[in-house]
Image 1 (cartoon, rainbow, N blue to C red):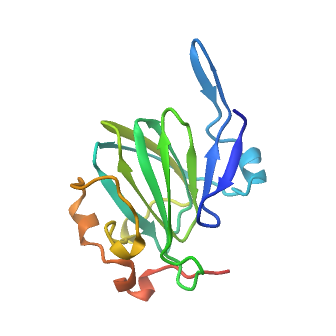
Image 2: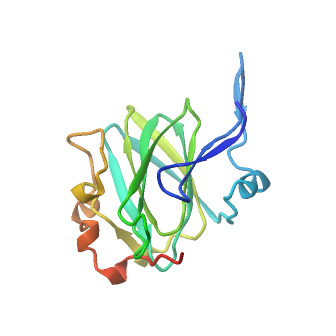
Image 3: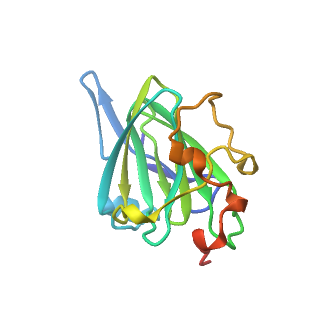
Length: 187
């Protein structure tokens, strides 16, 4: 397979399919190469990598930072997840719309989530390990979120009794989130 980048249903949210070279020993792939990603529209400087492990049925999100917005490049190195991006930028023509992609250790896909989008995922396998690159540092006082189960978002989560945090359960639906707590669309 050759390196491919494609638009999801949301402009700017991109699915990446890296070139994977497999043989009897296993496989090799470049998970990030700045020149190649930049020429495909992902010209960001990533400053932090995060690793998240979760069990089957876990839903994390929908998270974002407001004063320190982060673009994210997400991949799964073990297991399988449904990864979701939601446009929460005030004034955006796609405000409130979402895009979902299945990422796994077998399909090797990545999802690029730009600044101004909320991000979350649901674990489909027994366990899943996500790695994601961020364009800004985590800022403890700058954590925001949208209620993952907001029916107006129309996300078809593949779980009926999710494992979630109390914090994620307490977030408001998008249309009830104060406008000053949402990023603005810059065109």
